Length: 183
Figure 1: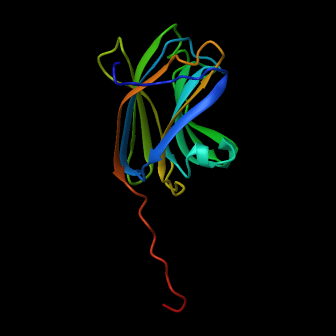
Figure 2: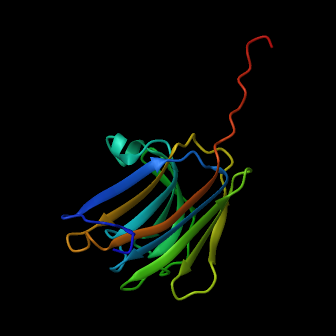
Figure 3: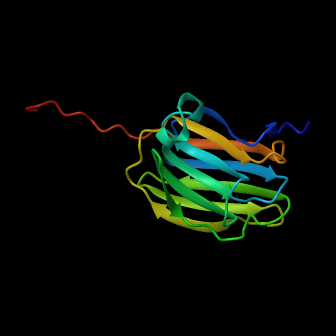
């Protein structure tokens, strides 16, 4: 009714929605989300800023390359990760307990310049300004073609996730010219 993307999982699961997006250089990603339940290691959301392939085209998430922001998790935080196959490396360790609470309303903003500097911000519904979670250098990103939203739910939280006001801007990864032998 509010023109939000709402989850509708009937059982414990991980669900996702991906759309084409090559944005990675001089890029900005913003997403509002609401979780009508306390975040935990089983109840969390991820915003895939840039991914090599959408999750539903892969046998599992272990084959994905790219960057994502996790909202929630065990430490109840907003953190940026780089994923290379099954290896997930936390690049920005957000403030612990930031997402701790019964209902979470938060806006996530990530900026990446053409030199590879990511800056991560979050803003709770009760705040007037964005909170700076941190920054990290990643000058050599993998080729990315997708943006996605993902959530993990338990049996009682399948309809507790809402995503809205998604804005993605930026340029594709600059292609390096291929040199011919002897040139």
